[in-house]
Amino acid sequence: MTRYALTLEFDGTPYMGFQRQAHGPSVQQAVEEAARSVVGHPVTIHAAGRTDAGVHALAMRAHFDSEKPLPPFRMGEAINARLRLAGDAVAVLDCVEVAPDWHARFSCIGRAYEYVIANRRAPLVLEAARAWRIGQPLDADAMHEAAQVLVGHHDFTTFRSAHCQSASPVKTLQHLSVRREGDRVIIAAEARSFLHHQVRSMVGCLALVGEGRWTAADLGAALEACDRRALGLNAPPDGLYFMRALYPGD
Image (cartoon, rainbow, N blue to C red; front, top):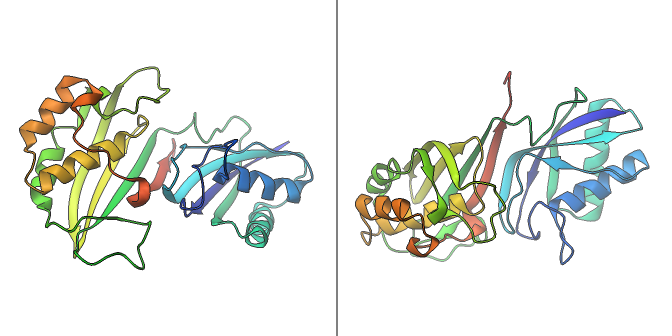
């Protein structure tokens, strides 16, 4: 049995999320079906993160085991060929052979996301479903300053989906920053792991700060409330991107 690690890029728009779903297409299903057609037996894809419907990825790490050994380059190319043939919005950027005990999810020690806000009046055309458009001017500097309230070891219950399956709402947010690039406001977040909807919930509240409707103190109060009802706003999935996963030795 050979274990392959994949680096995946995908447009989350047509999918119900990464994880296989009974009620619609998923990234996991697309890659599993492509890999199965290559190796000739069922495979299970394990990923570093389980993104929501509409969330995108630039470099999601995943792995699967194969009874049919192929050189990693050929394996990646063959899976890409099947994905293209099926019309899936997924691509294998890299494929390498890894140790049998390497696990895309459980070996991961860090995950990074970015959220893109298109801060402009005009409707989105090229970035439709790939950014959150906010027409009112945003103060990115105020957003960045307020974001530092959330950095560190906290109970993030306020920023946690009611459907979150994590055993604990306590997480350590290692990095949260806001920067402006032209009419794009980009929020970057890094942690060992995140709660369900945590990044989107933090972004929604930071947008309220950028609009002048909330202050850093309001954000801190929402955090301290440890109550989902204290959340100001949950941002849509369109602008969220899984950027990278970190592993020991990287």
